[in-house]
Amino acid sequence: MKRASLLLAELRSAGVSVRAEHGQLIVDAPLGVATAEIRAELTQRKQQLIRALEVENDDKFAATAFKQIAALLVAAYERYTNVRRVSVFDPDPVNKELALSRDESVHGHGQPL
Image 1: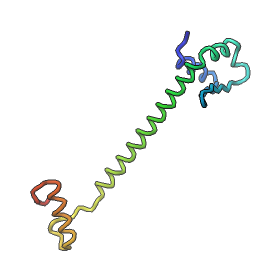
Image 2 (image 1 turned 90 degrees about the vertical axis):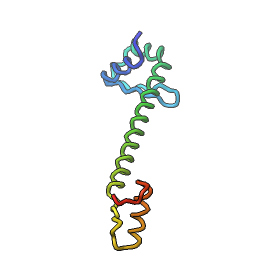
Image 3 (image 1 turned 60 degrees about the vertical axis):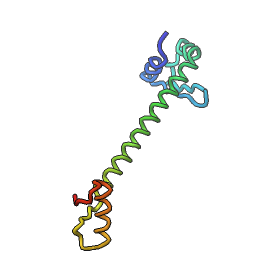
Image 4 (image 1 turned 180 degrees about the vertical axis):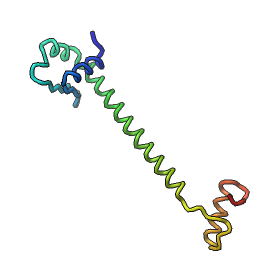
């Protein structure tokens, strides 16, 4: 007997759409593709196919989440690197105070970068 993922790949290569919705196996096949043998195998392996489809969906969800997290990290890094660096020698007292507090928190000794 074939593994569920192999059966899904074969069905898809034949133009068959297979998905799981609310515990139901939904199959949409071109005319003549779903032979009696294929229908029998789908019926027999329904639960395995549903589980395989759920794993595929979980993998797609995880991949999408990782891509979104990576995009957020890139945006945060770009935002951080584009922050105006303030010199301790800046004549504006507010900027000087910000520079000193930033230097002390990063380096701990108040030396300019």
